[in-house]
Image 1 (cartoon, rainbow, N blue to C red):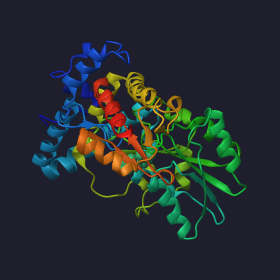
Image 2: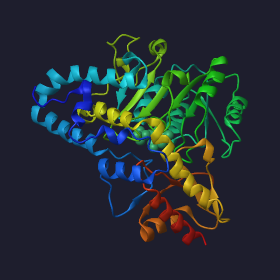
Image 3: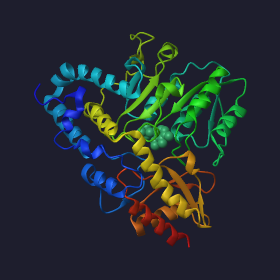
Length: 408
Ligand SMILES: Cc1ncc(COP(=O)(O)O)c(C=O)c1O
């Protein structure tokens, strides 16, 4: 067993490369010296372009990448002996560590390949009855919208869509909007915790509580929330939550989580054939075949590194980086900011009034080496901008100058 990662204490793996003193510092959001040091020492960032598309997936910190590389070699070298004799026990430990991180029971989570898989299991497995309605809006993620539309096409439910206000005055206005759209047939509300389109953060806890009072469930898409914004999973009050580990937790790509509150598991229908597992055992939902061992084995390392940094500190830094460009570009008439700064964190969107978003994204990339991404929002769309923790404020300033050059 020599060489097997110490799954239960991933911190040990870091000793050679991590200096815990680096993380003792408060790391104020605008302390460029601190963040440059962290970026340089712990991230291997490409120097030939500015990546403001960290919403796609997050970069693994160097120690996590090293652990991943070790895990790939190990799974490859040890082959089926490892997979059959060692991995199952390791997987149990990993699930426990992940559950502890999420402050829920291991019996309430399954590890999936991503948030899409997690949420499809929840959406397609939800025990809808004839006539049930579901509530969605234009800022929800398209794959979840499509999962509900698929059920609608199959005659199982009716989908009601509304337009979320782009600039709600406060959280209560968002709750009110959802509340107004509820009919006496609404059974489920899709809650996209952090929108992938404009970064809007919705008050999941308040909406889920309002819905629950009316006997309505929230299926919550926290793909972008986990690791980017602080929240307590059990305190959300949503019985079904899908999350990603490869966006803001910094795990290798190919890991998501589905949480289902213990009492709700037995009602869920399975998406992948399974007739043998007990109805109240969440494993009945995880019958999806061989999984990427090395990706899952690295979860303790990515959680350990993320904890070392601390979600509060990460969140404040990301919010700060976003605020720099919003505060500057909102003063330009031709630039339309599409995100309320106080109800968002890293992700925010904009457009330039007389320009097509695809063209702006193209000029930013080809002429300024800055990667952003176009998203669908109304007729004109928008450009999503997402810094990462390793992004220096200087890069945000280069982005501001580039947008000014295009707009003016
Ligand atoms: C809000 C939201 N939900 C779900 C997903 C799906 O994540 P994945 O592609 O990793 O399944 C994304 C991906 O960007 C997202 O932004």
